[in-house]
Image 1 (tube, rainbow over the protein chains, first blue to last red):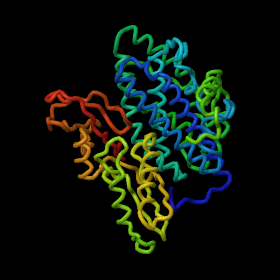
Image 2: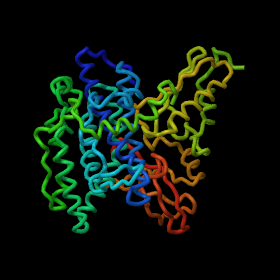
Image 3: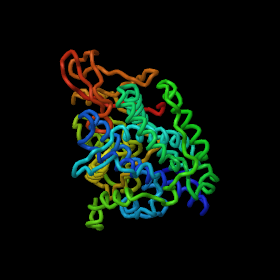
Image 4: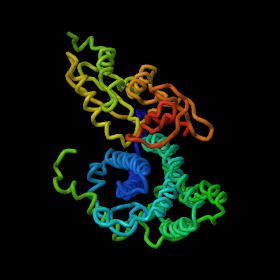
Length: 270
Length: 166
């Protein structure tokens, strides 16, 4: 909240909202998928760590939904729970299931996939947050400064897992290499603003898609050099672009599950 | 009785010393450095707080406890409790009294110094030994880490350092 908040033009306001929906939906879905690991992580300390990271991340998405609420987009809780898949603007990467099965049944979740997705996603988030700290939209810049302090620990955590598993047994290396391929196949829309590219980039709300991608590559290069692995390549064109509302079945199912309780009584006070 | 005209910010601050962290009853929200601003206008008091961590589920409890505490001051008709994000809460905002309160509860105060590689060190809050190991940077709440004292063989928690330098 700032006293010096300037009045936004209609175009700028719509651009800010478009970006906020992408940021909010990204963290919301990423956090939801991580929460499905609760009680299933490889060991007890990891269960504590990843659920703490998940809680922080859910807090970040709540902040973005709150900024949207302040811009008149609707109630934050409704934005999180009630929007159907085609209205969501998250990257397809964040909606993908953790592996086969269902946590209430017999989950066969893939930890290697989770480590790779979490490291790559968190590094992408760090690159975006670094840019957002200087956002022309001041309320977003203020939130970014706060988020930055928290993801410092998240990034450290996923870097350790990534490096250790890729320096481990042959089995671990094979699983990690397969996971990198899977994650990168969905990386085409992570830095995309979809059909809002021009609008979002016009007002200095955040850096360009190209700059973000370049910074991400720069940030992960030392890790890959150290491990002697080939740098991943960000696909030029996403098969589906989540920023344009193109999603998979996984998202439809995720929304149905995560909003089940909320939908039971829409007038309940949380 | 305090009337609306002589309602002072000091009076409000006094009652905020009694609003404790919901999980750490030896530390008030003032000691934690969460109270950024107190404004009294006529009989309407606005307290502006800084969240420690954005996803902290205790924030709404703290908001309600703050509202109730201030509402109890004679002469106060209306209370607003706001959370703001700028300036960001950082762990160096915890006061000396707050650090002592944390230790009393068995939680090491947040370290004031970070190494160049981002690592940090605290002593055991029970026996003051420096011979401790980090078990998990993430703890039972967003703001705490889990450590183990090799001297008195006690697991303990530390408040995580957070700073704008990160």
